[in-house]
Amino acid sequence: MSNGAVVAAAAAGAIAKAIKASGVVVRVRPEDFESLLSRAQGALVVHAQGGLFSTKYMYLLSYKGLAFFTKSGEPIQLPAHVEMIDAARIWAPS
Image 1 (spheres, rainbow, N blue to C red):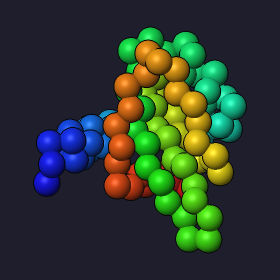
Image 2: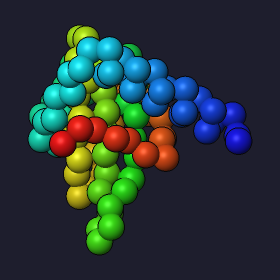
Image 3: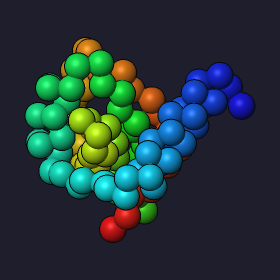
Image 4: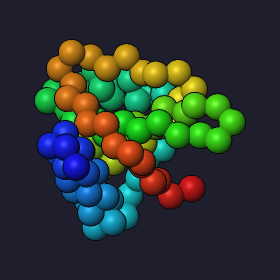
């Protein structure tokens, strides 16, 4: 496993543990997610791609103690101040 994959797995695991501990995932529209990104200085976003019939782009952000999740048919342009980790998969409750 490459160093980047180890870091991505650790970040995804940390967020998953935080979600399990708090039990809260806020699902928002992609445009609302982008609005949150503009306010979240030093943000870390976990990103994954998935989908059976078409590619879906999934994003997870921890902001002010909550985990925000969105899914989009198009990639979201992340601001320059946002750090992104690519994950193999993101699981979010339905």
